[in-house]
Length: 378
Ligand SMILES: *Cc1c(COP(=O)(O)O)cnc(C)c1O
Image (cartoon, rainbow, N blue to C red; front, side):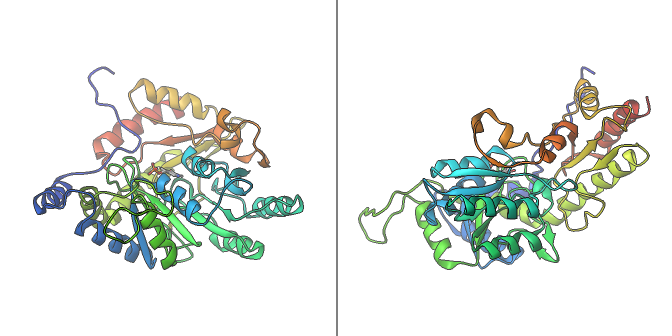
């Protein structure tokens, strides 16, 4: 298929509106570091998700890291975390010297299983381990079952740090992603539902936490004329120019979600009569942001596998990817413990994420739909 442009999984969706916002920020002279666009972007995202405070940071990873730093999580602490996630979630735990403890997934959604979380906390408590915080992850734009997870955390008296990097615009029981737990983290990386090219945000109702994270993100400078420091700081603040890009994207968030939801609908139709094939996340995605659509293909019931479909699409320059490789199987986490029942590993073996970006054109979708039909109707 030489000559055809590649179809990517989730490329940035930016155009003239974004250009005008960024140019206006440049012309205003507020180039670095902070400025009115950053303040406004924080307020707009906080309002959107219903959180009292927002702190714009250089990445979602930085937001996870600084929440843990601010809470004093460190060596000797154990942090239950979804195993089915991007490495960033677990890396943040390790930056502070704490130990990740992996919790396996719910079969339908791939999100942290509340039952296994309860087992994990009970086991760690019985072993006399210190558990200061739990980190669930909203997988591919579907919120975890916060009703159950928040109850499990409250019962255990443990903080909840919600990794909502993939779920901005989604919700659970009528409440927006980013508003759950003691704090939530969103990401504006290039492939996420909306982007600042790179960036992230901490969202919380806790004013003291927000103030401390904001201070930590600018080298923990004390509020005096000279450079005075009483604790170790970081250079993690989001720049005003990138915040301007984020403000433009935020005005388009609902439209971009609807576009992705349209692809989700089309994928459901494409695979509807295929035995052993389901869309990860279940039948009801009305509260999801549909960031990425993934299918799970049961090799015992289907005449083709997820890997075969992925290879056939790659040959036609259509990008796909397996779902996250579970962190408990990653070499960098060798020897680390958890409550594992094999679900995440099975979803990794049988799963495939499909092009889902809002910048995907109708023609591109038709091309990829016929490439899929060729494989599944063979
Ligand atoms: C993207 C992502 C992050 C990290 O966000 P960055 O902004 O890239 O640092 C963290 N957790 C999950 C689940 C993600 O998908």
